[in-house]
Structures are given as C-alpha cells and as structure tokens.
Length: 307
Image (cartoon, rainbow, N blue to C red; front, side):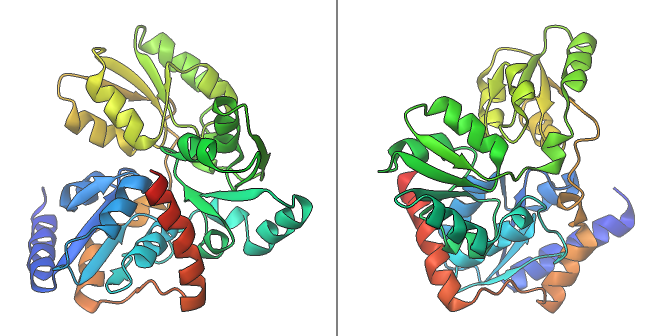
C-alpha cells in the first residue's frame, strides 16, 4: 500500500475512535473501502446494522449510495449520518417519484405498495412496506392483498412474480443500468471461458440472464451460496464489486465477472480521502424532513419486522 494511503488510513482510524464513528460499506464499494469498514453487507444487512448499532456510536459514515444513507438516517434518528460523496446517487431510485405511487394507488384501489429499498425516502413514505432483493419474495407472499404495486425495479418485480404466482404484481418500468448492461452473450462467453463454473445472478438482471443462471439471489444470498457450495468456480452476474468480497471470504475458490462492464460508477465514488474529509469536517449530513421520515420509517420498520 502506498505511504499516502497508509497515512490516510491511520488518520481515519484516529478520527473514528475520537468521534465514535461507525463505518458501514456496501459490497459494491472499492476494496479499500470494504477493508476499512466496520461492517460490509447488502441493503438488508446494512439496514439491520444501522437499526441495531451500538449506542456508543455518535456518527455513521455510510459508504454506498444516497438512498442507503437515507435508510440509515431513518433507522438511527439520534445519530449523525454522513456520506463521503453526496453525488453518489442511484439512477433506479430516481426513476420513480412519490406522485407516481399516488397515481398507481388511484388506478389500483385496494392494492398494497411494496417499494424496493432502492428508492427515495419520499417513495418509501408513500409505500406500505419496503423490501430488499433478499426478502422481497417472502414479504410479498405475506402481504394481505392479492394485488401488489411493486416499485421501482421491474426486473426484481418480474422475479418476485415468478416466485409468488398467487399474487398479481403491478410493475413500474424502473431498472438498474449496471445490472441491465449484463447481456446473454456475456454470460455465454463467460461459460465458454470457464466451463464447469456455476453462474450466480442478482434478480436486478433481466429475465434472460436469470434463465441462464444456476442460482438467483440477492448480494447476501449470493455470498451465502458461494460459501456453502462445493463448487470451486463461479461466474457472477452482478455489480463487480462483489467479486472482491467473494474472493476474500472464499479462499481456494475463483470468481469471474459475467461482464467486465458491470460497474456502478456511483458506488465507486467513495474513496479513502473522501471518508477522511467527511469524518474531519462532519459535513454531507443526510437530512430527512420529519413528516416524511415518520411515514417512510413505517415501511422500513414493517420490512424489518417481516424479515
């Protein structure tokens, strides 16, 4: 590691102790950010960590994208939640707005609204329950309605519909640009290069990718499957940041990207100097209007209870 990076890490460690800061990171962030974090996980795991954080922590530094930091702020109202780069957004989250949800409710009276965690706090406030890719099937199955409005990810919604045929899902046409850039020819070429490797896919991918896969699951479920599987080689159809965590957690196993272009630019915006700066200045604070926070918190709390 370069001397400058070592110095930055040393200063971060000193400040995190002085300021009682908890550092959370998503598995799509840069390797050096994952190594720095107190906890690395998927959206559900990060939400649970924020909700159950030790009272000694005064600050949460959230290394991921903005909707994730908003969720942490909803679940930890007594703490200051900081984002190293406030421009790290989520294109999918921006594809649905609160007025869209209200319009869908008018079109489908009696339907319940399940929103993917990859959504704005305003959309969460309009929803009955929040879901992640790891619990969406379970939660939709449990909801006391036959018709479910599912926003904003159409691909995840189609996957949930295939697993819960007894419900009718009304889908919004949102999607993840990073997962949708993984194409069937990419997967076929990866299989040719690594014959015998299992293909693990995230449900944000398109249906044709899921059909080519040996296992479909959330980030956390992909990690668990890779740990428990006797296989030694895996092709991963997801954001490529997960490959670092998979390799680190599974020595002796090999992981290959389904598509090298599957990189989320927003997840890569968090860097060591930005973590140091946000800890030093305590700026880039995530703020949510109280009226919106109370309504959005209900949908997230219901998700945690149903998980």
